[in-house]
Length: 393
Image (cartoon, rainbow, N blue to C red; front, side, top):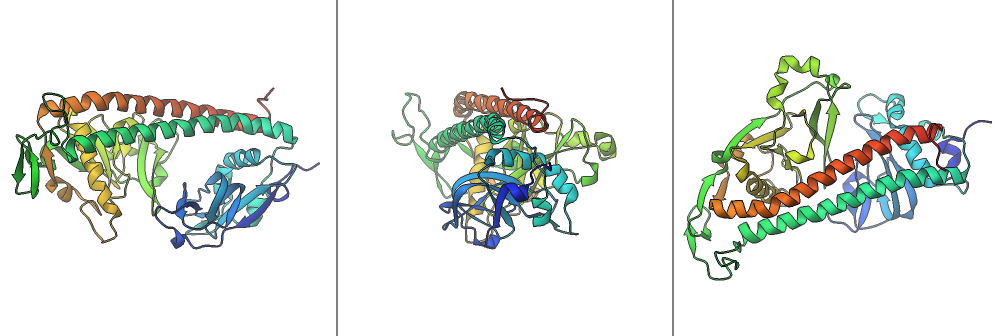
């Protein structure tokens, strides 16, 4: 008996919209061929589905799982399971096939996943109860990863709120532990900023606090199975930035002095296109990570200043969402960055800020490492569950 296929296990349709229908801050997810969805103000679907990208420039056809109201791009396949099949089992089966999909894609410049290719993908021939058990194990791991991501988002929001309170509103604790500005702390006019700042604080160019450097330009053919990775920021949608990490053939990169581009604990990484959310801290990356030419590295002089400067740059990053055109963080370059004016708080306040922020970052880092292990476990289990090497009792 032939094994089931996507074609006879699923009902398949596609979205109807162009990708430019996305609405920033919309009410519903809008699935395109990007890794994560945009948003939109109207929905065309309300179901329990798997979504498959129908085209991608690199032939990486992303698979998403969603339940609820959403909309979809016209090259996105929307799959629902027929009664005798489990939707989570179909989702994880397709995730396992991603590399094969890339090999089987057709087209020249843009890679297309045609419906005949999609429908011909085979599934393991097991009953629905076994499908549900496999789906439950893998989805439990993904649910934990997602919960961890939500916790980290809350922690990051806490840290950003503290920065705003201390260094934007200037209500850091005074010598009596009261909010400085609100409690009548002395403010002085600064001509460069055209605003009042706390007495004793200075204004400098951010270039005085560290060194800026562009990343390495590399040939994608150098991607290989090693423990060195390169960070790439080319996968961009209108509302999201996706930082991809690729394994590299470190031997073939030696002539490029690759060690000069390794990320260190003093580094803040900024996308040169000024995409919101692009500024990143070192703790988000594995060791032996290299930053590519789409990134500017800002290496601070001292770690004491790093947290404060990171949030200053994140604050500047918000300007890229302006609808009025170019801003200070749009299409950034080293010279632009060096000239940016930043307030220099007194050392005691920065050290006190770090006492609050470092434990938050430590917690974030621990969760990131836990997610990496959970992801490795899921990816290790996935093929063995699908081919029957491991069974769920």
